[in-house]
Length: 331
Ligand SMILES: *[C@@H]1O[C@H](CO)[C@@H](O)[C@H](O)[C@H]1NC(C)=O
Image 1 (cartoon, rainbow, N blue to C red):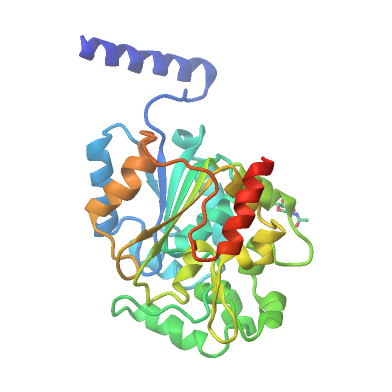
Image 2: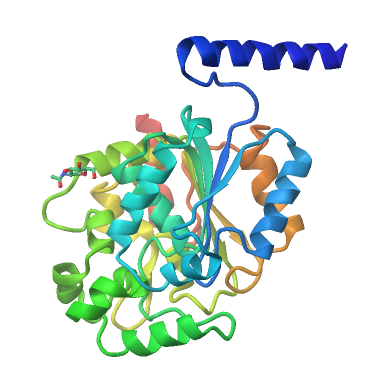
């Protein structure tokens, strides 16, 4: 009986493809991954991860973003290149995949997280439903990230970046320089950096499309690694940053949030922002944890994730919490 049923479904979808020229929305929501710095689209770790998801949902369509034909060139593109051009490539790549045309969920590891956010803000065609970012650098980094493993491209990137992150060559060619934010020199950062000030709507002219597209997400889920020492400050995973003396500045203390440059405040009021943590150092996540904390609640449409009201991760800041309570009453 089951067999017959699935055969019919298959037949029906073939027919509508032939007649309408579009793939109907059926089956599980597809998932797109964007790997992190030092990794590549189809590395062993990524493949094990995809297998763990397919095991739970055999029909799921998974696409892993790659910027080059070979794994080694794709890995190098995580260190060298122009992020704006790379995002454009990603926009074209995802637009041309028929399976994604009704939307998809996405997971960005480390820098892949803010790059997928840029995809949402600049293109979002087809649209992302739930975006999960894992140890990403939404708020920028106050230091060039360390190398997780002994990696020649990473060492080269660090030595070139030391020449001056905002100088012409480095700023246009070193990926990590493009989300570096010097807490002691914000003026130069705003004037020279080619990526982060734009994508965070920190420039004088705000792009309303960025905020509108981001707020169209069903959820923006941001995981921070509790012991992250590769990325500074680790709170950047939640859009946090730090001042000149290294004191933490949460998202909620920034104009980015207070003046709602990116729509994050609106999203938070609708319960669309989720701040969560993963135990351990940068990108040290087991398959078991990934399944429990990401695959089941966010990728398989099981909708068992807690959907509460506005979220505030820093409960000790009583003033902020009060402000939120008030806001909620107004709603
Ligand atoms: C805002 O962003 C959209 C999408 O990238 C772009 O098409 C548009 O030109 C931008 N507008 C401004 C004022 O920069």
